[in-house]
Length: 277
Ligand code: KIV
Ligand code: NA
Image (cartoon, rainbow, N blue to C red; front, side, top):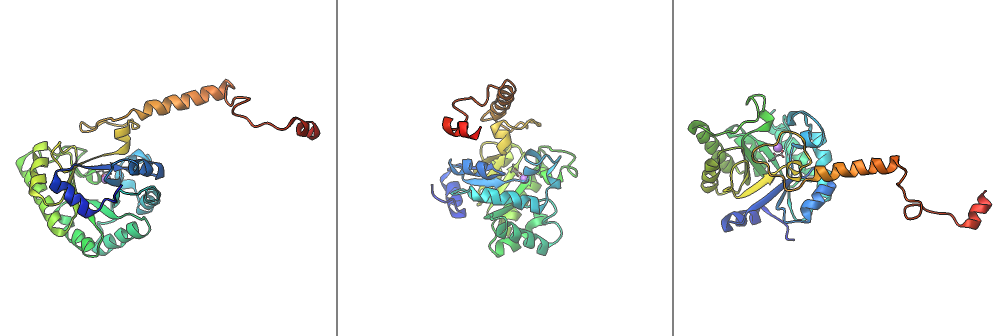
């Protein structure tokens, strides 16, 4: 497959070819994404919850993120590789944001970074873009601000909130963001922002009219037990397969039916064995 570039993503938007983005947190998942027409592999900070067991994304450190992005990078071929800037890594000043983004690229082997927020991020987006670090913006529901936002709620449902999200998206595009995630907003707003922006929009819970879609791997595969949001579709039931595999393994060990004496065991030459004894 041809390497996905920012240029090819712009062409996809122009042609009306939907962009597929999927999260990955480790090497085998990255290989799976690379074996299919996934355009963008995202090491989302959803890593914190679905992979590391933290209660929210705000617990994830840059070092933890980089440990995973390196593994994903080893398995990534054609997809564009983007990772989330962890909470706190871009909030303490432009120089800190730049330093952490450089770490993500240089140590983490990612090709671009994603960050949550609106107009308050434009200076940071401008700075990173100006030195050649591609930035994907993220507006609407911002999981890193779940406490301040009093939970994980649909955003932009009234006209003032919708106007603010549109203004944020336009400002982030103007600052140099190459693409933008729209999370949990009404489908009408998802369509309107997509038409207003020149950069590709990637929706999650933003309706069918965005330039692309993204889902969290574990939501999509059905390996995640937590809350299932309205916008999640389970494309597989890997949890069922996984659980029956663990169950069958334990049963086979405890009943001594595994390993099989003949087909799953090595044997010693009879003469050798006689000498050994
Ligand atoms: O962390 C994540 O997985 C994300 C996507 C769902 C957009 O930010
Ligand atoms: Na995220």
